[in-house]
Length: 345
Length: 263
Image (cartoon, rainbow over all chains, first blue to last red; front, side, top):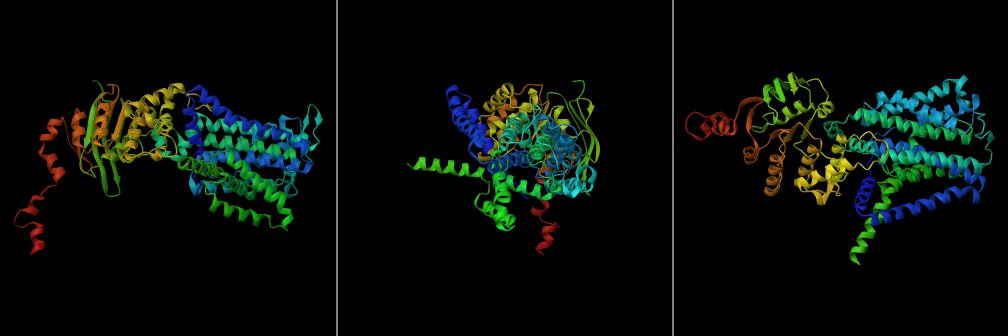
């Protein structure tokens, strides 16, 4: 599977560099980007005030899968490592959070933090081998890792509940009070997901993230510049696993049941689809991709007599033809159109 | 000079029966401006790959400033101060010119491991200075994919210099440059401090003789001659390597193969 890296993050970086030359234009850029972000944030925070519990729940799930998809984008779009087993770390996180909540405590940040840690540890253990390969071999290795975790979840019945799933996970508690209202759970998910997005965004904008993009574009050259691609890819893999684990932990807290399939191939493939649908390498594109995937699969899917996957497939095929760079590619098209229109006027 | 900066002894690289580099021994003293010339297929680029570690040697020993680096992987050799430009531009196409140079420069400014955004003032300043040196300061925020061939060659040089090398290997840096661009390049390379040792592969002999203080001629993977530019210019063996041996017979009468073909 070829993933075309999108250059829009780089061009915005360049725009920022140009803007940095004058304080006034920098303030303008801040306003232009900051105001919509703030509006979006307020809207997101206000969701439980006007939406019914079912909708609120759906948006919670979208946020969780969006975080999951963005963590995968760190691998696929930024580092150039298309993984077909990323759900393994999501699953590890979900089971960890579930088990911690059942056997120890469901007090707010503890289960998700341990879930993130477990995802990172699992990624560290398996990635050491996987990132030494590339391309199709990486795809196959991660596929195998995903199946391994899926099988473990199926077989370790005494720990994971086997194919029945891990159920009876107590609801998240804050200060001893269980969060039972959909709106409160939503805010909990929102805060942690936003922290996750922030973390991933910081990594992508950092010098480390720059090195990852360098490896994606031209690995031999990075080596000749004195970078060890293995080390960078390994750390990226661990970070992606950690953030996927965080998403898994939130998932366990929201649904309060974890199934082996949440760690399986279908989940991995759907998330890869979400990343490509949204636009790999942009971070915000996969958020939209994840929203489409969740809506089609969980919300509209049940009304289609089990034809949800078919609809998803059609959406994907159409999207690949119409939007080769995903939803994120649309902004480039619009910007270009605006520029040419301005030129002719 | 007590010990050479770069020392090759008995270096070989074979591809099956083909001896691309065959028993090459070469000492380059620190601060030297050394040129490597030879006809196409002489093994110049392969020899560079053996020095940088992009390709393992079949036999022999590579030493940098007295330390044996034969078994070190490429990125560790780079960290010891080997930097290069490649014969065919090898850059980060989706990224801007400045970002390309920054990737090389940030290694020297200890911010490359940072997981959060940094302003990287030191590295940026150095990158901009280098872009001004190669004449690309106006193109800093242009994606490399949009540059002309000659401009890409200049970015290559800026990237290589941003590694702050002790040993700079340039593989045909002037290829595809306009005369003005290549004159600028020569001036830039001449202005490099003596702390940078230069080894240059170049077909443009004007560039070679403008820069080099010593020249090695490679032919069919072997060292034909190492000497001063004047010695090389005067050498009959070098002329033969470039023009070919015994081809005169094609143009003279007698029992050459051409004659046989005609009859």
